[in-house]
Each structure stands twice: as structure tokens, then as C-alpha cells.
Length: 139
Image (cartoon, rainbow, N blue to C red; front, side, top):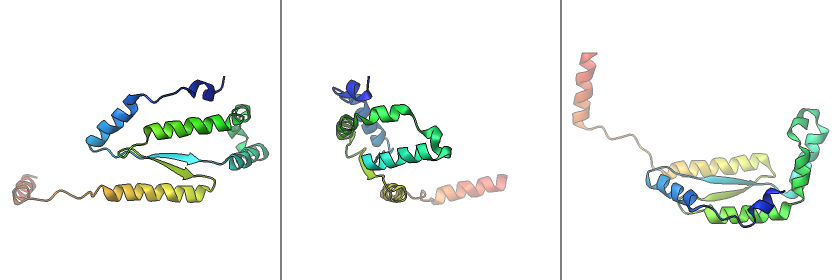
């Protein structure tokens, strides 16, 4: 039985969204990436896996069987992403046919997210400087 058959009536557990909300409230930033590969690019990569001996290990006959369910998988992914993408834990759908550009897109999103955190070293108070000076003398 295909995974898509099992997922047709799938509804995300509220616990996923609740956990991500909890983590966000406690300072953890969550970003999720879905690397979207087109059907034609998938075919191309499968052929490379068959044709290149060094990539044969990557290929499984089940890949061909599951490929028959492309439309069902697409619907399942859309449902999953829609149900679990929130302001505090967004999904980013990244076109992945071009690996180099996909990596650049992911890198930029990570950099932008880190930049939004507005991280800084703690401000050193005069009291803390005196404490450190005292500790230094002890060493």
C-alpha cells in the first residue's frame, strides 16, 4: 500500500503546532524547508542513478512504484505544509531542480533569520567588571 493511501485523511496533530509555538515563545526560531523537485528533474536524477555505477546504490525499484502516485503525494505535501506553516514556524518551499540555487536560497533564508534575531553580547556593567578583576587577581 502506498504512503499516499494512508495519508489521504491525514490531519496534523495539534501537538506539532503547539510544540512549535512553545519553542518559539521560549526563544527557539524554527524554519522548515521543503525542497521541491519537479517530476522531470526526478526522472533525470533517477536515470543518472541507473546509468552511473557510483550512484547505483541510491536507486530503489520502489522509487518507480511510488512515482505513480506523484499527484497524490503533491496533494499530501500541500496539505501538510498548509496545516503546519505558521508565522512562528514557517515552511519555505524551495525549487530544488537546480541544486546550487536551492542551496543559495536556503542559505539566504537562514542568514535573514539569524539577522532578525538581533543577537548581541551582554552589556558589561561596572559591577561585573569589578568581579572579573577580582577573579583575575585570584588566578
